[in-house]
Figure 1: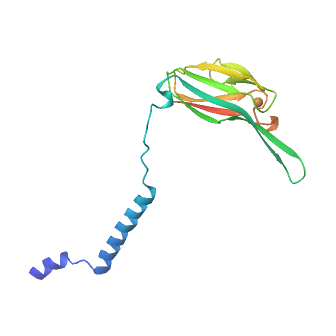
Figure 2: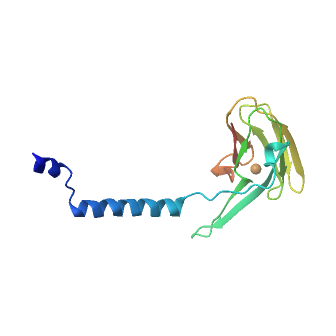
Figure 3: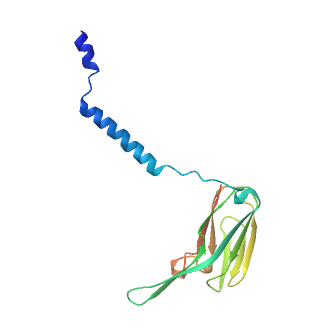
Length: 153
Ligand SMILES: [Cu+2]
């Protein structure tokens, strides 16, 4: 009876070694991927009225057959906008003559012209992903897609 009882608690040495190995791998992985704490010395950008700066850019490349391809871009192509907070979106025209645009699902529209700044005052009431679409460069066949994603949350 006593021997039976001891048998239940008998663990082979290689299991113990495997267990220790697993713990070491786990701790090692945690040490490598653990997030570093970010020390903050001031308020985040959205503590006051948030201004988001954007420019119009252009990608250009040449194919093996000599054909030139290009795509105009809003940069940054994805922006985060806090819901129900006033934000200022400033878009500076760098590449491309003009970019008439609209924001899908809203009545916001305008134009960004080379060398000029277009300023929009926005306040989104509803969360979602809104696309800022350039009407001239809306897809690949028109030197696009020049679409930015406004993530409202
Ligand atoms: Cu455009």
